[in-house]
Length: 119
Image (cartoon, rainbow, N blue to C red; front, side, top):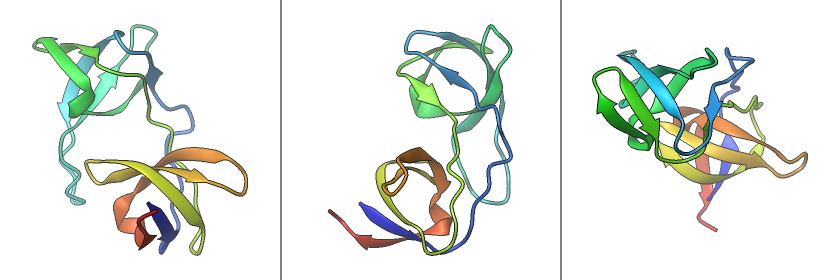
């Protein structure tokens, strides 16, 4: 799906959490902000990387511990109003996007995007 950016986005997390499928992670608090981004959990990897992870990719093993169901990175894409992006996955109010002119990729809040076509 192609999107146009309707509001600038800048990441507040310069070193995002990332891990491979099967990795063990500690599951912390559930996100409860005003944006309505449901099903995000603050997680930590064994090497102490911390960040927000969508609940859909976590297999809960016991309270506070889980295993990754897929590879994941919380990398956010810095974008400016007017940028055109290709979105490939939507999860919990965020879209994984590619910026074709320079091959950058990352998550962008859905509220900052407007669909321009479904190709």
